[in-house]
Length: 224
Length: 224
DNA sequence: TCAAAAGTGTTGGAGTTACACCCATGA
DNA sequence: TCATGGGTGTAACTCCAACACTTTTGA
Image (cartoon, rainbow over all chains, first blue to last red; front, side, top):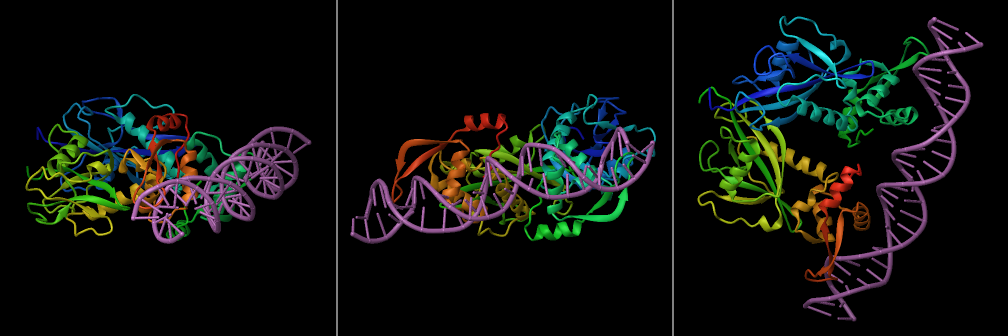
């Protein structure tokens, strides 16, 4: 077991609530970095694919089901893990609001959502991984319709706008955003309305993945 | 050694000559896939970083020096290598024309450039890796000035244009391309001219990496 | 009736595309 | 002087950014 390269996976799981982005972290039970917060993940088993390892670890450590998963980067610096030569393939994942509340299934393991604006000190090089994941989310959300994975199936337009504002970290012109998004022709306007506290009730929309797929095949590119 | 995940690196090395893109392949000396063509690469050693492994394997197998290196993707399917559970992190690299001719240093190992339009049957999942690398090159060349890594330091504008035509696989309007590229303000026009066979001699240009870096820091984005 | 959020059009400017002829050289 | 590739400008159009008031509801 010694003098052997070992392979881990780590996942940056994003959740979204009330115009805030969150990342799922777990508290480490063992050394190294005992009691520090870290990304969910762990060693890949023999004859286990990378994605299987990600799903297994997420289930074991957090009990969460993700909506979207994508490989991020593989870190292989020699100084990244005090236990020796440990290479980690990182993933980034998105969860829908209904998976946002954590069931405290997996006893003993502490898992918690942290606002991206208020992250604790992290184990290993996990801060670096998170930084990369956030950049990737930002750059990806403008040319692929990922955002919907973080929202409910049906959502008012303002949710989408707030989500983009949050992810991109800048304000967006409501009229232009709506115009542009609707012109992409991948949203279905529903007959339903929803009233969120004060103000005029909002129309609900739904992302149409089939239409998106078809447009993509035709070479039409999504771009916000 | 058995029942142990092993880690390899594989590199897709691109070269460019006469309006054609080439990929560097080696002929496998041992099973599996003995005598098939494959991407240069091999097992990562204990206490060796991924990039070091890439450079080492490229040197051992091809004797080549690359100009640009970037991680591509990590493949971890269980069926990708008949030898067992072998995970491979792939890289993509660019070489300048002066490194394009192969010195037959590393005896016994056969390395050869293949046109991307005429690739042989490949070992493992290397065809898949190459497909991904080509997509990455295409999408990246339009928002990062990678192309220069495939050209001589000093080059006539037509070289740049032909390179983009080749990589993107479509024709480009000469006037618009030149206008746009020059307006990015990262090329220095030299006083030198070069005459390539027939026709009016062309002015030489040089990429200015410092200027590009400065513009990038100011938030100006390169985009062709 | 007031507060709060949803919904909606227009205009100017920037940037992109489309397009064809002259220039400098070597053979 | 001819063949070859290099170098250049303009006009139409499309796309993007900027900008503020009306509508609908609940309290």
